[in-house]
Image (cartoon, rainbow, N blue to C red; front, side, top):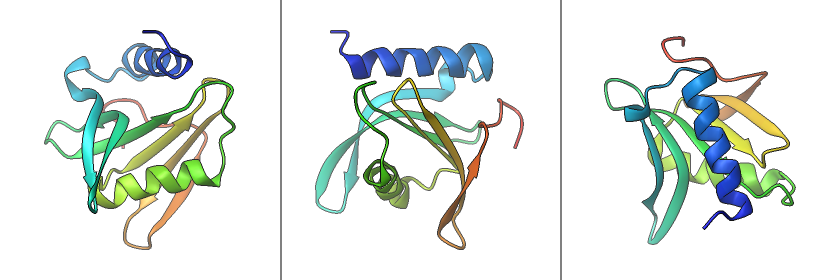
Length: 118
């Protein structure tokens, strides 16, 4: 069913494929993640060629405001997944950051790198 969140997710996938040139084989959608003792579901994960996680994307419906809670949610996922980049979007606003895992902080970016760029 095409829910508002699914609409955003489909547009992000198209953006990753056509604009950022990520191979479809590197993109994984809506799978389970065990976080502490609970099962969560991530929206989109993009892998590097070596199997490490390059990007986690959290999609919200356009009516959902992006808040600190949204970043906290994706940051919790990243404690387990250790991605290099995070993206949070509601289809209207998009926020990108690079992870500084050593110092446990994010560095906000204007955009995420295309496939093949660091």
